[in-house]
Amino acid sequence: MKNSSSFRRLLIGSTYFWMAGLALVPYLILLGASFLERGEGALVSSHVTSANYLHLLSPTVFSMALDSIGLAGIAALLCLLAGYPFAYVLAQSSAKLQPLLLLLVMIPFWTNSLIRTYALVMMLKADGVVNTLLLAAGLIDAPLQLMYTPLAVFIGLVYTLLPFMILPLYAALKAVDPRLLEAGRDLGAGRVQNFIKITVPLTMPGIIAGTMLVFLPALGMFYISDILGGARSMLLGNYIRDQFLVFRDIPMGSAASVTMTLAMGLLLLLYHLASRRLGKEMLQ
Amino acid sequence: MKRMLHSAILALLALLAMVSSGLGAAKTDKVVNLYIWSEYIPEEVIAAFTKETGIKVNISTYDSNEAMYAKVKLVGKGYDLVVPSSDYVGLMRRENLLLPIDVKKIPNFGLIAPQFTNQSFDPGNGFSIPYMWGSTSLAINTQVVPADTVQKTADLWKPELKGKLLLPNDPREVMGIGLKVLGYSINEKDPEHLRQAFEKLKTLMPQVRVFDSDSPKQALLSGEVAAGLVWNGEAYIANGENKAIRYIYPPEGFSLWLDSFCMPKGAEHVEAAYRFIDYVLQAKVSAAISESMGYSSPNAKAFDFLPAAMKNNVIVNPPVQDAARGEFLDSLDEKTLKIYEDYWVKLKTK
Image (cartoon, rainbow over all chains, first blue to last red; front, side):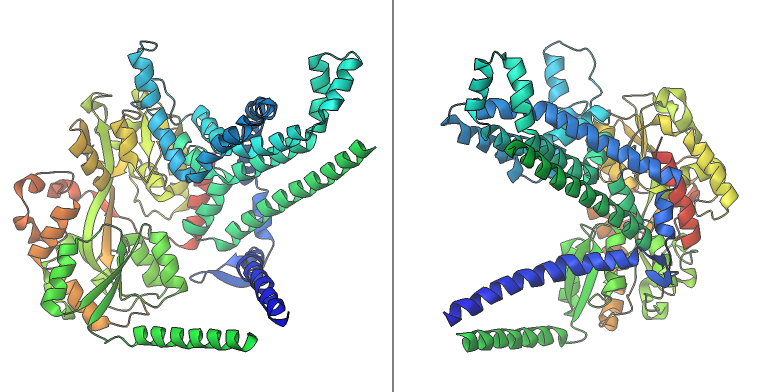
């Protein structure tokens, strides 16, 4: 008994140590650095200031942040539009087929997303697979400009993040009680009305969860817009990286990073509150 | 059980301490720890050096100046030689991260051509010894546009290059184009000149299809862009795959890069490091490195040992009068860096 309890303490202790030492402490250092000034020669000086946060509100930086949010928002919307029908078909398919289809959704996850992004370059470039096939089929005369366009960025983001949308939607759709739909039909609702009035509200937690799971990583995935979009627009992720590496302004990079984390935290909190309210409404 | 666990942990710690102290106490001058760009020194050269001197070379590699700088700045110990580019030599020297180097201890230092010594980033070579150099200049895919479309930097603004231009994803190099076109130095610090360069560059942005510093050859080779600013190593590979890719040195001037050996403050095997630098500086060795890696040697005598194909390749060995228009990148002070940053963000947001 005593042995197992000390073993347990060791396990739990190491988890706490891991979280505190490798997540909390570095984050607190980041938070502290965000209120300092950059130092001449040193990484930071000990002068306390809120100038870094004010600089984030300057028109240039602010519009850059809005661009990033817009991009992530569109990516989340596209994923929802593509993911909902997919998850719907998945949830309706025969019980035998479902594990296989789910596996197919998951398999791309096993490859690093950076490698998959470079694979997309091979597909989309002027002498890539897509253009070669279209040219050979005689459908186009000159290669299409696919690479280094917003279209390529959205293809990359949707391709990478779609599973994050499909899985929560699938779980939510599976949980919809078929008897409710039957009751709807008995009361004279058509398929469309059933879908809008029963399925969509019941899967709302899944829709919100999926949207969050796509939106938040999309904010940080600057390498996709760099590689596929030609790095023509700066995103929050680029900005933070450049502050740390290129301009050596650690306090500024920290402030941008802390703000981004806070914004994400706020969104998660809203999600938590919304899903609790939805759950309560459903119980009633 | 608890006691057993304790003693096991203690034993482990003791073992660790033994191993690490053993490593630290390695014989002072029988080893040198080299921290260098990946794929930047041939293994044969390392093997030959060890055979001749009995000094073992431990190599670790980096792929950006920033990564190397951060490691030296934050950890400091463990490396005897690093190979920063010119601007980082300037930065690390000014931040007191480097040991002074006595060129008198390096007999072969005299072989280095004078245009590579005594530069603004390290006057008198008190802290750095040149290793390899090259340029960042204009490449053209002559299958996409006629070769005479781009003959000077100002040609990048030509309407026929709209949406067909590649630039490095690097604020210094991009600002450098604007500065050079206006006749200023790429190390310009005057805020007014920088503002003029920014205004000039704003009109270049619609021309740009892609910013890429990692593998710009790919966009050039696939015909995705017609012209671009690339470093000569990329142009060399692209030209090897497709002769239609040409590389020119514009009359306005261009930026040169020079990577040099430096000793970080925490270097422990200084004598071995001196011997290594001197070995690599020999004309024959330097030529072998240049041939195997495709970069130019700063060694004035190395040229004679190069095969003819390499000698005549202007991408690797620009004619002297062309190279003379090049300028080495130096580090900037924090205030100027902030100006560059502001313009960089502005260029990249609509």
